[in-house]
Image (cartoon, rainbow, N blue to C red; front, side):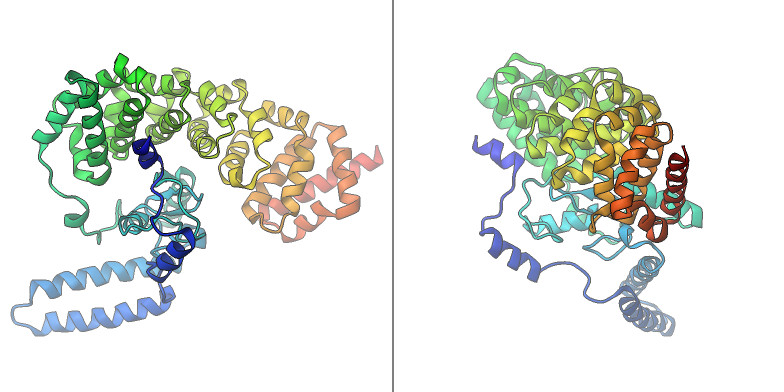
Length: 463
């Protein structure tokens, strides 16, 4: 039980308030605004370049520092051009690999990894204690950043070039890994549990172990054999640790493909979604999130029947498990061929039921917006009382302009061929003028849809 708690939650030793104060004082958030910081870097760069030019034999250290300053200047210059939601709150730089932590906030992977490595176990933005240290790729933000860059001819690097690789990527002995893998399959239960615990720790703490794993002869075979064994079925801790190892390995793109192509990995994860242990189900869902980032894996996950148990997990009521399930469903919903299955398996009803609590809003509403281009979704949303709910979301002050735009698009789609819902909106409009206000202060698309809806309301009066 102690080990299970360790694997699913890294709670701070200090009380939450004290830990928050300590972390806040040591926060890595940029103190200076980007422009002011850029001016500092410019001065440093000028000094370094002048030193290099004046020296007969320039020091390699000065050349390296000049290159580093130049990259920093590029990053800081880009920050002033990008929308604020694309900027990492920790580093103050454009996010290259955005990930979501358990508080629901998004950060660049390299920045939040450094934060967590310093033993900070609170959210840098909300200051709440993190229930776990799982990093879930924010596929939506990453695609938005990529599209924004493509439209404007910008090119971001694949990773931060200034990460200290010697510090974050230690060199490990592959022989140790091979020995641990063999113990997973050929030892007694106690030996298997110790090997799984050790391998889980190594693949979590050491990136090179995880990256090299696919190169170890039959490495995946050992994990699959151990996970499908009777010992794993009878011992939840062993099963959970084995799934966590697959999760750690799935952090790396090369392993995503290897794991997805291996015949039994995805079926075993889907099978784990239906176990009694909520912790095992959550770990399996989190692993499917990572694997589904590859289109080939996403198709396989859908075809092998993962959506139904994921929707059941979303309906189960455990907050962290629901978040993991929702994120997996969202990733699978991105592919057009998966949307119909998400709908037919009953996702819309569950999502509408679970949308009310604020803690699920950030993960559930994007699924609804993504699926609402399908007429069958619009029809079901209308039956489930979506109109008053969407109007309520538009009226909330804390709702972003982008989400208000999504709401008005859905309302327009619902009411275009439904006079009963149109009359429902008319009653709201007479009292609160919700649509009229949005037609003046919304985004350009929101204003267009609001005006189109107002025209439908005017025609309804004439009829």
